[in-house]
Length: 304
Image (tube, rainbow, N blue to C red):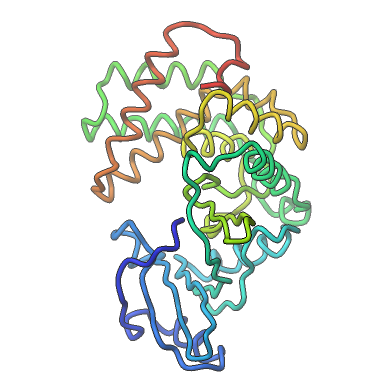
């Protein structure tokens, strides 16, 4: 997420969790500025930059629920990496987070070093120790995942975003590569260049980490593939670095299932908000349909 501010916000509009957290900072609140780019998210999980009289700056994230906020705080605390901003305080559904002062990464700034290091961090996130948390998670049944994906594809058809023929073909392709099982653990769910900031000192930080949760590693990789534009050469560097931490064979063999799932979810989300980007995932789904007309070895998907 880009930390550039959007618009001033009245503190009175942010609720009791916000008031409680600000009251514990120990300095007068000077400014609240919205960082949220999708206006329809503000009421449920808006994001704000807070500036205090003593010069400190924090990010405040309003989560959908107190349980969700507690999950984010717990999981971030387990990731042993300085590139992830820490949760400073939590109250109810509100999170106070370290603010990173940095600029977004442009395409020309995607150096080999940066790709290697960010891929390694994603691998490290996936390898975060979470056995105790997994014990309380229901098993991820791929048959249920397939049913849910089919329903989401049908919703796109009902909205006339895709044709019935396209829907049937997407379902067919997804089922053709559905995995029998998948590995789960700590996942970021929006690990991409848009949420990558670089400080003046050249250090990189992954921000907008509030979607972190327990989930499927290969879904997380598909989300990165969809959200992070790279050339084939850049992708090769990224996957090679990630592969030093976790084997990519399950992802490459089930790529179509996870990629279609990611793009269908994105399309529905953006259609819900009526954003100007709503057509992007639909266009990419159609590109995938055209590419998939020619069978290719599973590992070639990682170069798309």
